[in-house]
Image (cartoon, rainbow, N blue to C red; front, side, top):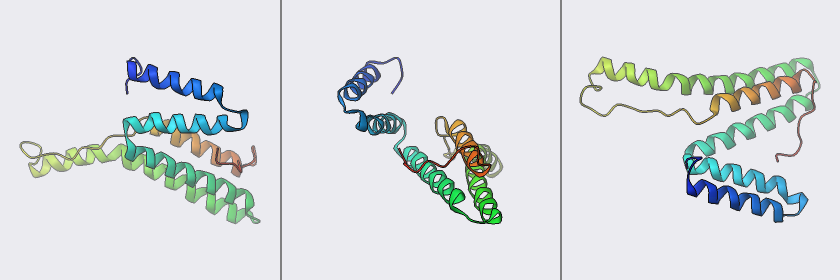
Length: 148
């Protein structure tokens, strides 16, 4: 859904109306639902990916804060940050590696080449999650208990 389109204008208008008509305690849920719904119009599969990394970061942050030893906090923080970084590297390298393989095997000339799309905003979102995990590890902020 393009930003400069009638469907987006209708979606945004509906989301704002639902937000304004909702009680204050439901508003975070409305925003979450509208955000996920908007992202899902672009790619439902990548929406599941974003939800997955969100759950991973949430659980890791709560786990980091709950660990009693510094070594336990460090291991969990490194594991979670490494998982998010590897995911990003995997998506960044998938297309060049597929193109390289297709060129080397001759599939690029006539056969269908593998195509990978980098999810919209994934780099930004993963770096924000990594920053959040590091802030929790360094005790700059407390881990969010609520997933909303």
